[in-house]
Image 1: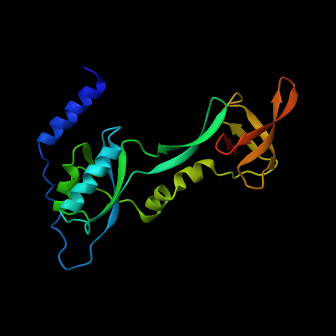
Image 2: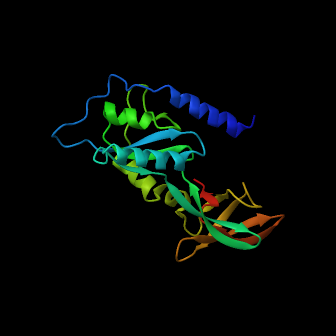
Image 3: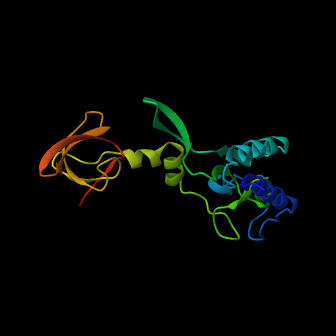
Length: 207
């Protein structure tokens, strides 16, 4: 039996036994402003899109659009070189996780938790923990990627190279491109100094 067949069997078995909401989770809000927050749910790896589609249909069919507002699979675009050509590809920021904007109550928790492929909310064993506004903003609008690839060095700074043939070597920054996407740096190589060009995300500053 293949790993995928085993995982499919596990998903099916899990969803035959429904999970009840913890007692700490309250009743749906009636006639008051809903406490809509971003939460994170964990899914089986590779099932993110299927869970998103299934849960979206379930929410619509049950008339819960006002309680479960949005389900998001965070993606980021990266350059990938293949056969000498560079193209943009979409990658999952957090494989095995989805973001969901909702009010957590016993009914909405039950609907999400008992969706095939969902293994649980991120949080304590009794109650999901919402993301802060800042955390959600960074994930949704690419803050994670921007922080990873942001150039915060200037000429004269020492850096450590983290990718490529010079990985783990130190170098000195010569110049930073106007668009802050790459730098030129000097590296000592067998007694001589070589100038190399580095892309954002392929090095880190040294103290």
